[in-house]
Length: 245
Image 1 (spheres, helix red, strand yellow):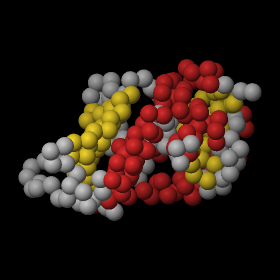
Image 2 (cartoon, helix red, strand yellow):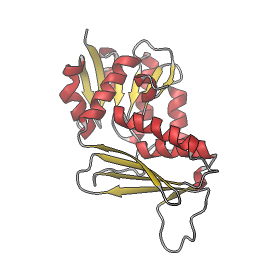
Image 3 (cartoon, one colour):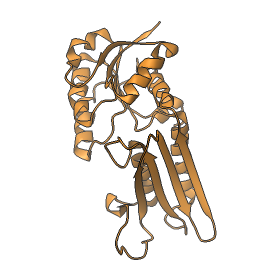
Image 4 (cartoon, helix red, strand yellow):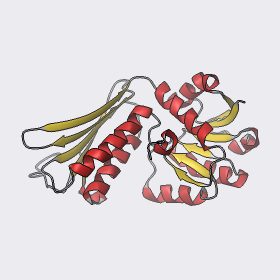
């Protein structure tokens, strides 16, 4: 039985990728919408909603999903903490998968980074840095995936947002022990590269994932959309979908 999906951001890169493979995954884009369209007109025509739109469009859509008791998959990034909290409050009564990256490989990267960070914690001699690169049209930085990697490192090392160095310039001085660097590169048509560095004295560990086709994210989003239907209300990650937690 095909799953009907309301797709917000249907004309964007991810939206087009999702539409192109939806039938291969037992899904039907029953109501594709974009900027200026009214999702309320199609909310009753779907089983689940996928949002890959703009940051400011997520909260209004989340409220409509909550009112109609429709599960939601959120792939839009760039929300600040207050916006995230509003979205979580609005969707507290429905099941939601919210991920910065829907790739199976990237979620394995999250898992491996967490394992490495437990061993190479703040008491070790290893300095942690996150480097990501995306196409020149990407609007937000760091990426949602890089944000998640930084969260993993912050949690493992007991750090705060103030201890994340987003790029360096001038004369920042010696690198503090309790710091994690975050660097965003932009150029060309790069789909998405992410590397976590653990740099020690005399050795270095690098965990890298490189995406070459947006269809890997589209396939993950569709997998999440099918998985979330019928789940209890609450917030889920892609690692929940993949059974990594």
